[in-house]
Length: 465
Ligand code: PFF
Image (cartoon, rainbow, N blue to C red; front, side, top):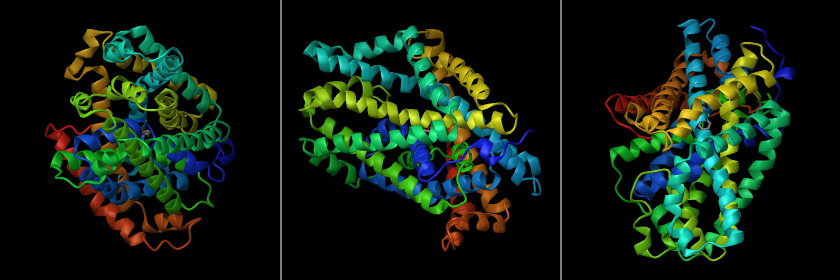
């Protein structure tokens, strides 16, 4: 194993970590998935459970991940090898790191496909805004999206393009690539969101959107499960992304404060994105809404939303801005997914960053090609293993790898890691951490029970993603 010095590995400065980690957390999960599942599960009550899950399951695990990363200055596999040297189970704990690498590999392979769609629709909206968005364009949106999905060349092209952007940033390293890009993109993303939120504030559907999002209706156990599961995905937990980013955090930074900021930003953006989406949806006549959320699919963002945008005042300007926002949010997440895998080859295998990024990025792209083709271009891949290639990879990563990884991290930090090590690390850069007993209680009991419940449900044939 050839170890690099912290200078060679790179580190975040100032707000670098908070912005990069918030960038990882804020992504398609917030802008597409959260509004959709909140709608499906009845609005307010779901949002409430989700907030509770972020607070009592997500945030303690995020503290644990960042702490493990900063303590060891290693990406997940190396981190567990270092920490587990003298503890029960020894090197076997590095399996958690391996699962994380696999999860990063899997998630990025299909996430880049969907991220590619946002770039394509950004281009489409620019052209609609210039050339006009007619009734025929609106009527043809569904068919057009279907044709786009069925066009293998286009699918692979936009997937490759997005992987290219992601690799370009990761190759430039922690400071020059990740920190510089997220420092620029995150404020941009938030400004765009604020502009869109202000525009929704003045739109006719806003009141109804607020009412929906904060109305407490009944919620069933599937909704509860979905809320807990999503709190994981949205905070990028369970696969060591925060261990990897944590390994670049300076010893002057406070881990609890950084975690609180990241969770707050992620939640705020999910809520804002929901308000924007619901305002658009509730802003159109009731009869037209009926088709919006009837089927559970990823396509709403691309089939219904464009039409709604162009029906809104100012929509001509807003729609390209919206897709740009989604693409940028996806990029700051794909960067972190790639970094987890690349960092392993740099830290443990001693590869150079450039070589690791090229090889790993290339392999992930290749592995993603069947996903890109499984949405219509190749019927054989569409029907593969019942869920299709895309669906199977997503199922394995989201329903298995992330919860199992999160369970491992909670148990390791709560029960195995010496309390003096975690105490020392958590107080470095923070001072006395009065919430330590509560944090330990959540990690030892609440997190394993909640995640155990997710795994139990998946084992029994349930699906929450
Ligand atoms: N948190 C991202 C989202 O909400 O879109 C997805 C994600 C990124 C999951 C990075 C896991 C990860 F490591």
